[in-house]
Image 1 (cartoon, one colour):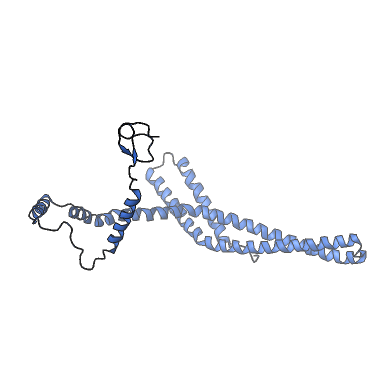
Image 2: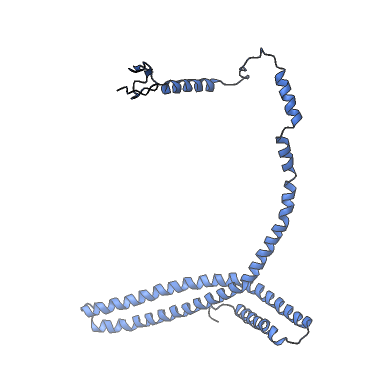
Length: 263
């Protein structure tokens, strides 16, 4: 076995799984006239075998992925070495054509470089084939394990759904209490109105600020409103209409009383 060979167990499991799937596919075809309970017993047996094989394959998936990453790294290293060997051979060839390298030197060094390129090509091809084999194996195992993962996720979702109504039911009793507390009863409203009507007339219209209350913000707000009101106050009406004698805004063109031209 080579150093990078994957274990045969996953491949054996895949072959067994393929066989069980074929049996399941043929069961309905050959079961014509057979007792239904016998057919169902065989179907259940095959399905249990399929589930066991799928779980066994899933256990190998992480190991195979790690082997694939290792082989891919070694393949990239072999690719770089192959390129270096080819570059060295091509450089020597060009120097020989230029006359820098003599014929004797070219013949002596060429054989060694050819051997280096050949060995690098074989290693690169070998690792490339192993990389593709592991890729296919990981893809097949991942595909076979997908139904199991989907079934597990579906089961988990159903469990969360089953627990959902209990959680909502536990939280729901407090909601009516909150709503009821926020709506005053009619009797309470009548009592409040009666209390307001009984207040003495001498009560001040504006209550004094509570202890500790900072009314500087209100004073600043009054100043801002006063300034804004002064800025927006219209100019005095000084333009008198010649027709009716009414005073108008000095910027007006027509009298706002009789409509006469003020220009």
